[in-house]
Image 1 (cartoon, rainbow, N blue to C red):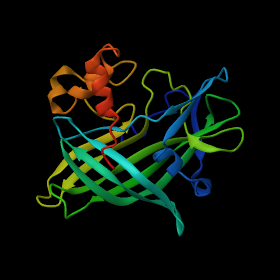
Image 2: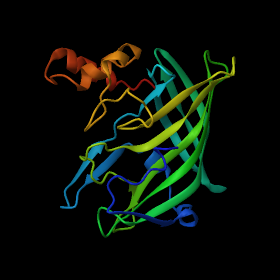
Image 3: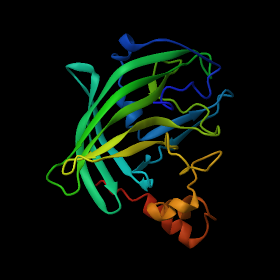
Image 4: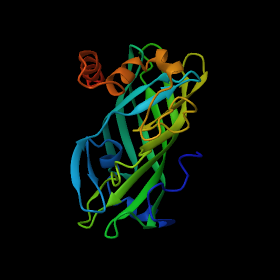
Length: 248
């Protein structure tokens, strides 16, 4: 929880006020499972981007871990709970999962990056159960910090202010995966654009970059796709592979 509860990186002031009672009137699924994000800056520059796929790892060797939320729906009988469905992938093993994301805390910053906007975050309990009928499955449990904004028109959405700033990251999850069969647990963390508590896996300053010693653990294609000349055929092929919708 060190990263999850750390001070806000970009806000002018880290003082916060409670927002727990109010967040039930908003739909956090628009942040957790956003398809696109609207980047903005203080000069009123705006640009819409497709949200990048989640980056994650599992185990002490930082094996690449893929997770995609196919559906996140606010529970109509409990506005603090979200029903989640999706798929995970490790190497070539793909598993479906279902579970819940439950808001336990929500706060907004006294001062944010744009004066007419409110920026805040929700801390959530996450429990996801992979399908027991599939091989090599287990459950994922941990904490998610999901950052949101409410713009000057009252729209609740993904906080992509200052998207170009070094170290930009959102939807940071810290937890574990536990095998149904052996009851053994492994670290399992993920996030948008960066991964929390990932040790020396990430050596990037401005953006996520994998240390050479972990490339063999599922990161070779990512390196080839994003760390070399984008015009090279091998880089283009790698990016095509990164963009494959493996969860369908």
